Image 1 (tube, rainbow, N blue to C red):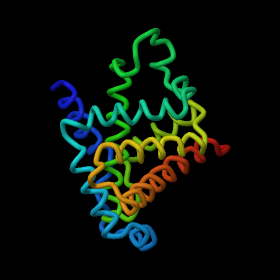
Image 2 (image 1 turned 45 degrees about the vertical axis):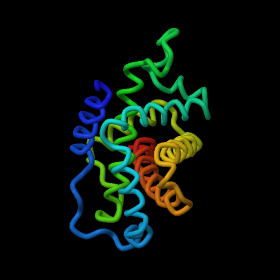
Image 3 (image 1 turned 120 degrees about the vertical axis):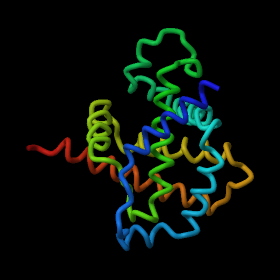
Length: 189
C-alpha cells in the first residue's frame, strides 16, 4: 500500500514538472508520433499507472543495472549503500518512480504538444544531474532498452512491434530534449 501511495505522490509531483500542453503541436513531431502510437502509449501507461507503477518502476531500474552494472556508481545514493539489496533501497525506489513517471507522462502528451514538454526547472535539474554524473549517449540507449523491456513485461498482452515503435519514438524525443540541455551545460559561456 505504501508503494501505491509513493507512486501516486510521484505521479502528482511529476504532473507539475511536465509542462502544460502547447496550443499547437509542431508539425514535424506530431507527424512522427501518430494517433495510433499515442493510443498504444496511453493504453500501456493507463494499465501501468496507479498501484503497480512503483513496482514496475523498480523493475525498470533493476533492469538498467542488470544491463549495465557499473551504472550503479552514477547514483550518489547507491555508492555507499553497503549491503542493502537494490530492491530494498528506499531512495532507489523513490528515484525509479520519479524517472519512470516522467518518461511515461512525457510520452503520453507527445502528440498533443508536438514535442516533449518538461518544465524548464526540471530540464535544468536533469541537465545538471546527468552532466555531473557523466551520462553519455550509450547510457541513454541502456535506459531505452530497460524501459522497453520493462513495459513489455508489464503489459505482455498489449505488447506488439507497433507498441515498441511508439515507446521508442517517445523515449527518443525525451532523451533528445535531455541531451540538448546537456549540450547547453557543456557549451562555453
